Length: 131
Image 1 (cartoon, one colour):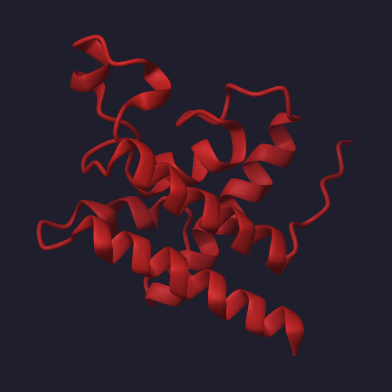
Image 2: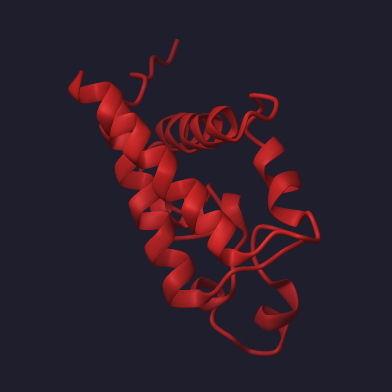
């Protein structure tokens, strides 16, 4: 049996900070983990625009896909899922990791909305950890 330690609130907040940096660096996308068309047009895989989950995955592994990393798969999934769940709870949407992808894809959503959700969730987690 493989045991995985649950990520701390501070670790999750750190992932969210990195996810903001990812969006700032490569851009924000709606529709899938990363912009497949941009990738097909020749942009390096790690430089394609990402959605919320793609940004979290990139912050955890360096890639929009969780499977690309030297870190243990179970640990990557635990950290990415805990991060997505924290954001879902902050947004008051169903606490299902992939639910934030649907929130991300809503037509009225903007990159700033995503950054703010990440930033505010991280601040809330750090405040809880310090209490």
